[in-house]
Image 1: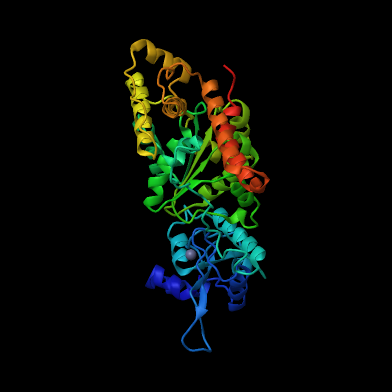
Image 2 (image 1 turned 180 degrees about the horizontal axis):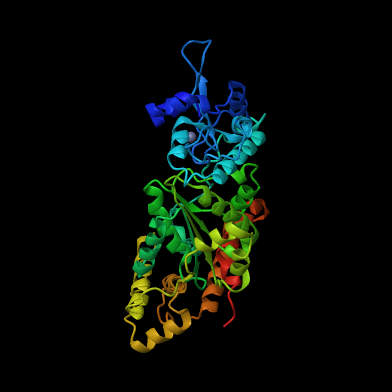
Length: 451
Ligand SMILES: [Zn+2]
């Protein structure tokens, strides 16, 4: 670092040591700055260190060639084994903004020689990748928002019925999930830079809806929050600056069907772990993975946990929270909750244009047992049963439909909708679009384990 800054920091007595200081020659400072594109080398800062002055013949410099090992005995990270030439060599300099230069010299225990060397190497690598590229193609710093999305509710009608069941349409309120919401809030608010966890649960139990209800309010309080789909994830991993990527703010990433994205997740988690190791700022990064099942000692999760090596792999493991299984909601009074879900679905149907639904019958203990046996209390199937009863204007079989029957009925209705919607050949595009929507809707079910 420059003499003025050092004197300012260390105070008067240090000026007596000036003759012994191995300061960097101007040429070394210029080279060190240029090698990192005049940006601070702290990955959490990357401030631009040069700019114009009002005088058009002058430029402003707020950067410092800081010593990785100190210029004089008693200074931060001083290494007596180096020769004065080595101490003045560009190898011993890291380009930082003034703030970061102070930071690293005030806390040499935290900002070790190894860490500074790593920053330097990464900053130089980043600069060499950016050189000659347009600003549009490459962000100036690694701080970049992930392409997260949260689907917004669409205007609803009674057909297609499947649309009523998509989680983001929130056809009925989330019910009986207070304990899960609480534990996920704790997960997000954990002080650690990186935390990740897996939510498991059977199809239709409401994992996606739950994740949505966690992601939405976070977005409203300034987090980058939402779902990262397969295509975006793949592109992100392939991004030429992925190795430098860091979240610019608190970030919650939800990834559905995690097992099908194993390869991408390995690299994403490795990068997140690397970021967490170097991270000194306040930003938090949370990954929430959704999958039918997950076992740390088996299958996809084991593969994820054994990827990479050494410190990074340990970091990935240490930042993982226990797998949380999501069961049918309503721990306290599960049968009551089934009825509440049925009633809410009937009420939702009544709000949509069309004839009023039949009255929801009062179910006795036997009927509730039957309903539980057939739907396993999963909200998706309870809603399917309620919607089918509404659509057929007949509640007599409400507790008699099994999951497969309900799915078949739903797919049949979707097909009828497609036929009506498309008419002739001319609407193939719509047909394809609806087909994709149908797959989206039924896809998760097709992978259901036979029981
Ligand atoms: Zn800085």
